[in-house]
Image (cartoon, rainbow, N blue to C red; front, side):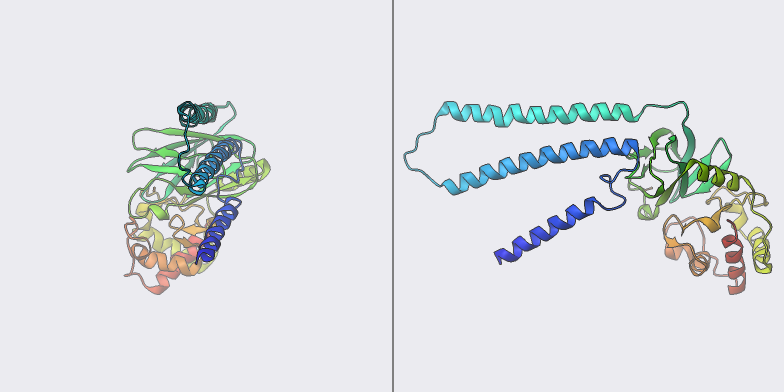
Length: 328
Ligand code: CUA
């Protein structure tokens, strides 16, 4: 029985340790700010491990040495043990962590003159993304050039959310009426997973986003591509979908640049076909899932502002799907 327990304990520890190297972890940083946060994490982990080992050792020692009858203890030694172990060492450890934390936190906020500004708005439950300099508007996906400092300007018009990309920066609250700025520099090209890290209602778990870090040249190409409005639908089906999209409620809630659809309730769909997920991570973006989503979004993401369109015919839903998937 005891052996089984030990094996389970070792197994759990191994899982925890391997989890540390995984993607989307703060101890696998890919940016300068994330690196300094990971540094503090390791110092705190090291100190905590030291305390754990020393205290466990003392407990084991106290248990195993047993009662020694008649053994006299020296009051002086007990006193100094309490002073050193109970006061001086904890104060030193906490002081080290406090100084490091304050120092790092202060350095995280520094603005830089060449930073790229991006406005991010927390919605129920998705992320609005806007690049003020180029006028690009998208949703649930940020593109960043590697090596350039960014300033993510965070606002909300509903409840409190929290913007968190563990591999790139710390968490920053997204508060109605209190804009916050999160500054960081992504160093390594790749796609990073972001989460809402503050409970914000029914679909808090489906408020994911992605940060795509590109080489500056690739980022430039992405900006140039995104500044061009989508071309006219090429297939007949997509053209039919565009007409239905405009005639139905869709255009009242969503914007598609270059068309008369200019709703502001739901995400901008100008580049919808290039996004990997539907509904801020609720579904993978493919034709089948998009049809399901249009037919009955509230069944997939209860609480979403997107209504169900069960009254539309299968053919109409397929046409809208073809149109939206063509927007790249
Ligand atoms: Cu938004 Cu949790």
